[in-house]
Image (cartoon, rainbow, N blue to C red; front, side, top):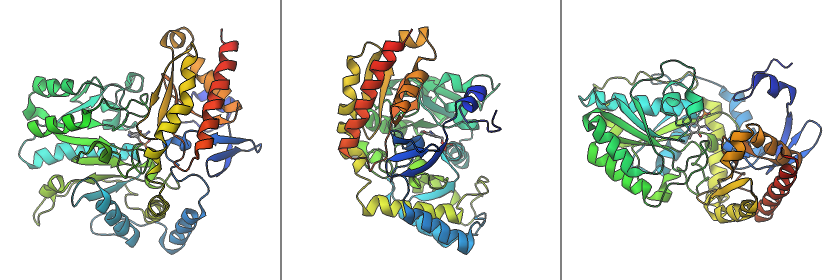
Length: 418
Ligand code: PMP
């Protein structure tokens, strides 16, 4: 048995059925035996520019040779961190955004939720600590992120989580307002929502959802946190995903596509009014931040990746190709074992397996994913079915191939299912 305990992997199974990835090129990855797979998930929703971009590798190497790592605590900084903060601030969906850098999406969620509470504290409303999130929402696996998470299985067995978090149905904006009123609006710090729910099942919002959510938050003095960890950096066709719904959140969390995963990086874009209580000469310190926030080599990876996204027109492709991805998967709906094919907002989709089949046979979705993989395509297993989020450089013919592999695999899998 391997000594590697996999994240979200069954300890025994994962090491006895390991798939060892070796290299990547464009939309393809190769295992150690040289087998090629179409990367239908962009690794874990992040390889937005695709694999094997030597410009990013070279930017990383150049920075690592010059100054690989250095602290940014206090007033220490480095040129790539300044540049990336400036670049992202200019493109953020709020004016004069401050950018707080962390190591990944989970850290970004911790930062945004803690900052939301601390912001109200600074404004003389320390009782505003409640955070509202959505059923099926996924916000990472750290403290706050676990507590606000909307996938029940991820919250079980950890004892008391961060208190004062509340979940509402993901598709009912009026439920958010009802919850604020129930709690008392002098008690609520923030609402956190993904533009399109990702790991919780790929659920685009109902029409008008985010505009209405913005109004509700404004009406009650509640901060709106958009968790754009999956949806940013082109996945919905824009920098932070929410531009699509024409709203300006108070905080936006990002990670994944900011470096396309060439190095780990996350962050929060913070609206000027949220930063304001911390921006005066005599303001307190926001006593928060991880060792590697603003890490120069990760910053260099982010800059190189963001320039590729912008200069090569890759950013827009998440929206341009969304119809094609959905259309390529739609034929899967004719299978009895498939409840529905969802998506169409951004280069994100899911094939949901019929709930009665999943209830009868809990290993069914894993076996389907295995069949798909043996047929040359990597997908992401969700509790409801399979998710798809290929690199944004994918070509329409490759999307067609993706759909064909799924259909063939469903046919094989149904034939062998108990
Ligand atoms: N928020 C969202 C919306 C995510 O999709 C994820 C990761 N899939 C996270 C937060 C957590 O990010 P990380 O795994 O980098 O901690």
